[in-house]
Image (cartoon, rainbow, N blue to C red; front, side, top):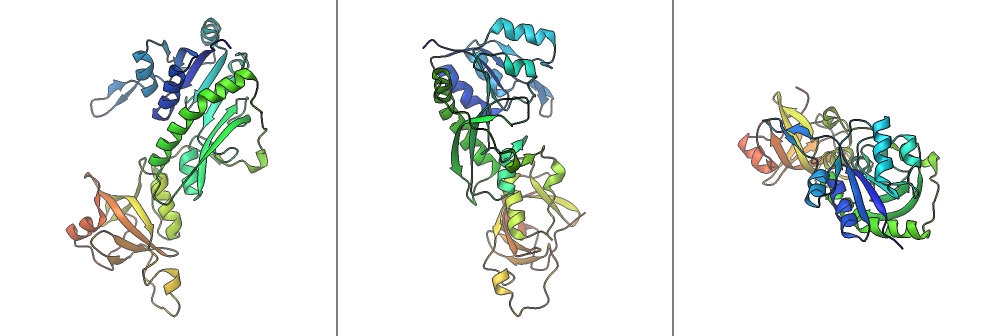
Length: 325
């Protein structure tokens, strides 16, 4: 079969391995679409998206239109004449004319096991929901948001040690492994389109900084999942003596005398947010159900550090309280 003309649409780091796999394949990437360069850092210096940096290394034309919903964009895609458009984390919703233009359609790599966790933050929501697995789905795009027929799906486990950062990396590599066989099979007509069960869909929205606020009336397992889900961004936070402190790593502490299995006959529970144990590596906090063992924190305007070191440096002891400002 002849090599396909591929237009690639993707912007952040998760899209880079997939773009590299297509560049290394027998097919031809005739254009890369990504979001515009954005100012970053203290100097607000313009920074190229990661996919743009990779495309320029291979002299692949890069396009960064502010909108795809105009005649100029339509004329550009007609000139590029792709056989297929491959999309992963582009950051824009494709208009109907584009979805239906390429002969083989537009396919999207989505970082979840669809129909679960459609939308902007599938990795974070999989961890927030305490899923034991997630994966990458390649779907044939339609005019809905992540509602198209699925073509290929691969799974990975999610452990109690995983954060959004580690899952992000694993799924980026998984997408790269899947994309070329998927494109080849689509060209050969050997992929089966499987309609999604829309009744099982779980929608996700954008993650905001405010969502990282820790409420210690929630159960320890919920708080631990939130801390993992929002690592590395935007991070989870609480307050100690009016100063913000971020929690980067925490687990349920089943050994505490305040853990559920140790509470039979106990009385005088501490207030949620109260430290109930401190050791060399961590401190533990009483929650709405169970105890949260915190092992990595970041004080305001400082670097991440071991939670035990933080406790010693601030002379934290049992009875200290984390809560609102």
